[in-house]
Length: 336
Image (cartoon, rainbow, N blue to C red; front, top):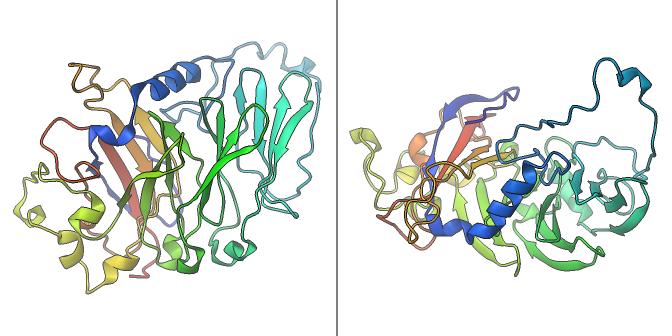
């Protein structure tokens, strides 16, 4: 599991989750996984599913780095901070600009060799979202799969853009800025589903991670970090060993009354996925044992593991081997 240190965060919790059907068809993840190991490509914000953010290219060495020269430059036209890594797919570089100007988070497609602009896409977010963005109006990057570029906007929309010409394919609302929800993480595509989590734990937002079908834009499933077993996707096959972790809806009863509704656990960070964990063992169970981990934050002085443990299918409990997702959460401020 990848754990990234963040100031003010504490109390590590681990959650195992989700049915194998949640992540959809196998071809998308396999293709992206192969492309992520091609050193000439950078197809997801963290480089690969393991979040290595590391390139194996070795052309630049100690003895020649001093001879580097500028090949080309391109201005995004915005002067705020840039937190998003560009994607490079088949010699096209996809860049998302900072949140500034008339069209914040504008997406650009550039020829990676010449820097020539191929197209740009200008989202039109609700500027009111800036008022509930706790830690600056940032974006952590784009997602990509099957000739589609995915952008999560600060005002809680997920947008699919045609990678060839830049026209919008669909957009889907994921949250509500009136509840303090924003989205700042880079989308990640796994087996045809685009995974996105929300931000806003500092404002008492109830955390969730949502999977959107990459072709239709429809929400496939959503799992909350806190609340009843059904919302958190705890299935009947979850068999905790310790008695204090056994029982139904402990994610509600183990919190003070209704405090789970602002329990935090927002999924603003990074998702780590292991497509090689427990390889295919039977045609009927193609994704057994796949593991994902999500860096997130949760609100409360003593976050309760019952409140965010999850396991099961999106439609109900399961008893067959399942895809495993672990969500790493830590508490921030004591809003709860």
